[in-house]
Image (cartoon, helix red, strand yellow):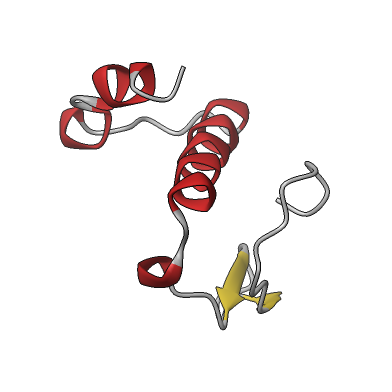
Length: 72
């Protein structure tokens, strides 16, 4: 998110996953996000998923469009 221009107040660190197939964010807890940080993080997650062919479950996507409209 820092490279996207929306850094978190407490950014933590990123380390390789144990199985070597990805990365893991350490030191950041979403419960401490401000509303704007949470919104930006959700947008980033969905963008990352779209770029990496993630197939979201209906539960993950359910209601997201309605929620997103509240912030536009």
